Image: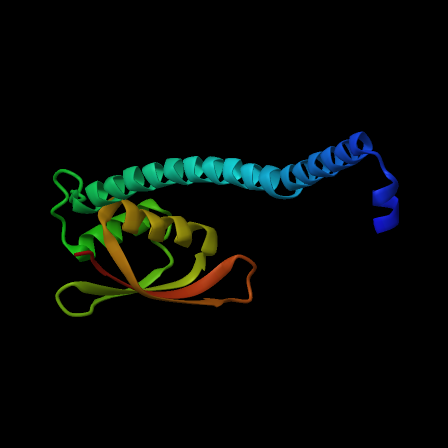
Length: 161
């Protein structure tokens, strides 16, 4: 290789040297600089996206705090006893004939036994107790019967805090 280099004229050596320098600069740009810039651009976009997510999360956290501080008021005039409330809502849900036994469980809980009750009426009734009357389902046991869609259920409900 040295003999080849020595056989070149000064002008050819300059051209070959310049070509090698240009090739090295091009390789440096393609293999180092451009990947670095692409990575930097991608990181800037990622940071912008993450900042937007963070802003949304902060806003959502404030909303959660606001909602958790807000007291859920009972419906106006709903000062009925737990027994009356459960009995009336069960009858309104079409579970009056299935209700076999209602018994207090201390001051703030009530046990309800439903026999041969329509399962599709029980679940919305329980949901309404929790959602509309702020009652808590403490315990729920459901056993199916021989009749399709009918179940025996034992529920303990209590006042929410």
